[in-house]
Image (cartoon, rainbow over all chains, first blue to last red; front, top):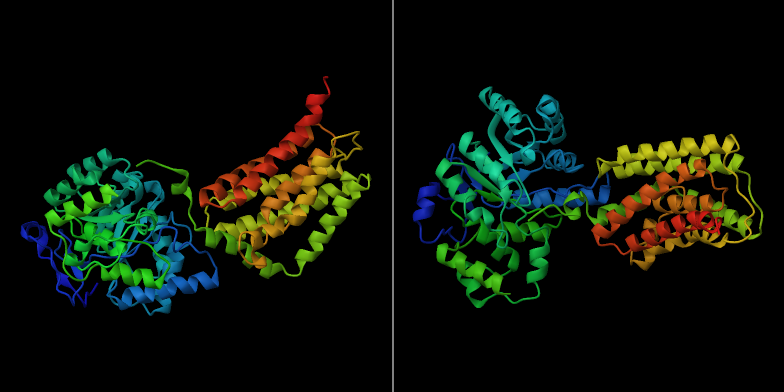
Length: 300
Length: 218
């Protein structure tokens, strides 16, 4: 992928050392993938539920508009799964309509027993209409050892750029930790947001230690966090980190963590995707500010 | 964090409701025809007449086949990968209704009392389309018997409550009961109040079917 608007954080070590993870006002924050140093925009887009619209022409048009706005704002990681109903086909439709825009970091998953993995990957590739994926992940650790064999073989053959393993909703963290220690993939995907912070204790430090990129799903807890926080005023000090809305607040908290590579909020609204992407601009909170942000939300 | 029913929901409420709009657009003007037929059926029972299961079984079977194929498998299946599997339950119910109807095992009887819950459920599907505008959604998203699964299952439970009790009619209750249970869970998880209407119809249908059996021993 090619990143046109970015302020690249130079490695996890530098990020840790930096008192504030600042991206300059006019440039969106990108993070480096530890395995290669390749930059990737810190705010991507997920497709769970939001892009599962079937054949509905009206809702497909909304998805295309969201994808267009996403790429206008710099693009980055687009994540899906065979589990997500029609989402893959909807993404493929949008990419074809938009002429396969530059800036795509394609991420999908294998979600089946390993014996059927290659056939599922072939179908996923067909639905997206891409030549190859940037990242394929073992979804929710299903048959993970054998599926990781498949993905590593694809990577070795040049048919895949990165491997990954996912979990969600805070489950199976011990098993994910075992994978990260015994057979570290290029990426892990897990649930991390300002109220679901269990991964801060072990998995995020381990990712830094092992050089594994981290994708954070459910950054808004399926929209519950912004809905809940909408009833509270933003703290006055939020302006110090360039935050004017709660979604920006929530996303800056996530993407400013030194171990985090990208957050993938899902939406079917153009104004929301623009708001999400805007979170990658401006000053980022440092460790002290992140603590303050979490404590503030806890106090509400 | 742990699994919740919400984690199993693959689509948004808007996507789900619009499936009915797309289906209604595709089959117009079938809606007034099937609603008129349902009204005539309800009136037949209200007038104390009992239609033959030899034709009503296959007609109802056709409604299950169409709903299972066109809506559950082809329409709902675009957003829920479980739906094409669920549709097999509709095909099985359709085959049973046709088979039991033609073989004379589906018999609608003159009941001394207790016919009204069954008639009420059949009549309820006539007002089922109103649930959409009551929810602030357009008429296009109305759920119509023989085109949408919930009212089809509700009407079937009502008709089975008007039929002679036997192991065969008990067998016919399985698919509508299971579907309405699944639908209740889906709608309640979506946060849709219609889920409670579906649950009420399910419980009323079960009670109407079981009530004569409970009364008999006494």
